[in-house]
Length: 290
Image (cartoon, rainbow, N blue to C red; front, side, top):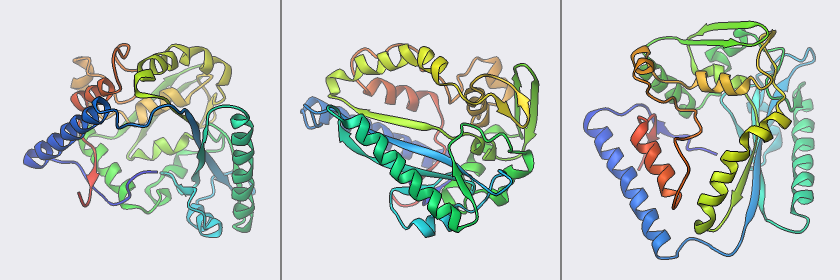
């Protein structure tokens, strides 16, 4: 669910030391893979679900901390916005009735979230982008009070060197200039996790990339943002631009953004993905204590 105690952007020798530590971690993973010390012979499936909290007018309700206190359940946690929540499903062995059990677990946790939200005069809803969101809801006051999120906002702002500018063309035209990473709080999603043997990773990773388009076409459900009719699945463009740390000169040099589909198929192992990410992108945050 993410380390909460973090430091912001690194510079100079600190950055070099941290990068070396990342490369050492990748080397350690490589040794685990070569020594057959990663679990094999079983597939598991799990998921996490993000949601919005709304008031009686269906506007965002910044009561996540109060709802979490009512829930008192480690499966639930914060998201970037005080009007968002997230919960995790326990991983299940993939096979038999696992998908039915997964659905039941999802329904039970959602019901618990709704009961807790109602005790805080709000409601929990599943929606990709809440249609009632406005720019005023995306103030720093509505950011979850966690060092992790404040440090993330500062680090991304330093890398960009200017305000966030979003421009999305659909049926309508959308343009927004904003001063924080809170734009990302417009998005919620359902994320599935699938465990496979290390040797199977390239096949399943590449398969997931290949079917992303058809699956997206069947599942798109976020056509509105701030009252504008945009993409059938506006979360893609919104997420790409809300976490884009490139400056204008980087765009001219064709430097890739942080949100992308990678740059080719995986050939041999998951190590290729980690090495690519370390090589292409600057570190945003580090743990406060190593």
